[in-house]
Image: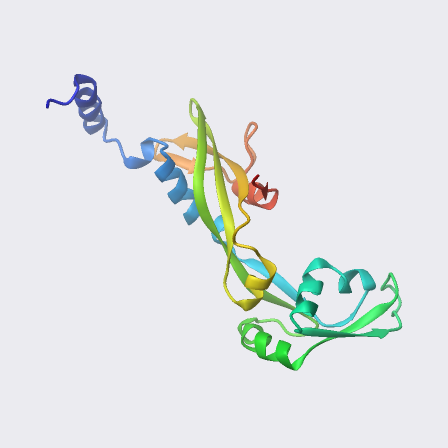
Length: 199
């Protein structure tokens, strides 16, 4: 079976002007560029807080998860100046919490009452649409969190998918993700930060 003339013409034109795979914004290219971007690869950091905290912080959703897992214990304390609403709580790691967090805390360069712990990373699920207008495009995609450890598994449900849209622009060397606001598109880090769970 002979290939259509239009396909042969397109192939000859591409070879004449040295087309690269990045010249055509396909779903595969969009997925590769999003997955390889620094903003997408940045891990989710959970800040483990110990010491005196307000009642609001002690009853936050993340803190309640740690309490239910038996990783932290809080004893009621008088609030120091500037910490409210009362009552305040003195949070310490339980013995089970020490076992869970020990290696994660050792990986952190910080110490003290507030320790950053990497708990999850993003994983691209699907490119759901590409809308092009000349040298600009909006790419809509689904992603979810993948736990990096036991704490990430407790805090993030990998079954929840988030929908984001990011702007792309075509340059002489191919398509690139927008890193700053352009027209109606938002850069990838803003798109990830404002993502809502997909229905």
